[in-house]
Length: 181
Image (cartoon, rainbow, N blue to C red; front, side, top):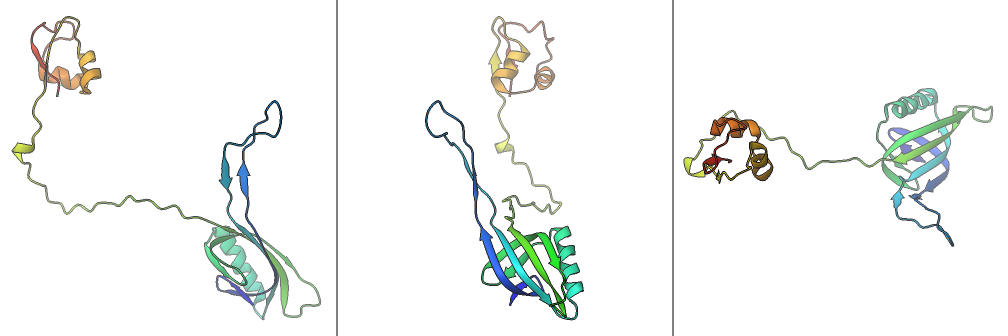
């Protein structure tokens, strides 16, 4: 007896599979080289029976969960958490009076999680401490200096440099101090 989600199954055979993908590149002589190995998700195959007066509803439930991609837990000889149903095959024959034989393929799924946490804002503004206000940085203009060159050197946008300094782009006087931060 095994259980997939909330459905009881009579499993005759369980198979599991683990594999990897490995890249390979041909070389002049010998065996091709590999530079990357990627793990594939584990897969399980079950074959057995759904038996009971509501076997049709149980099979339909499993099909609906498969279509939704619902994460399930399988408990049998193997235990597998976070699996999805990849396929369901059923056979009805006269030897089973109150049920069907069934084959199910399962695949483990890894859930990605993020360390990002949304910060809650309580609506209050924090007071600005004047002592933590960044001090202005100035650049002494030499021949050939431009707003573009200051942007490359200090990272301040050209529009901000223009707003602080009020000199036309092509007439920045040599020897003046430009505010750059």
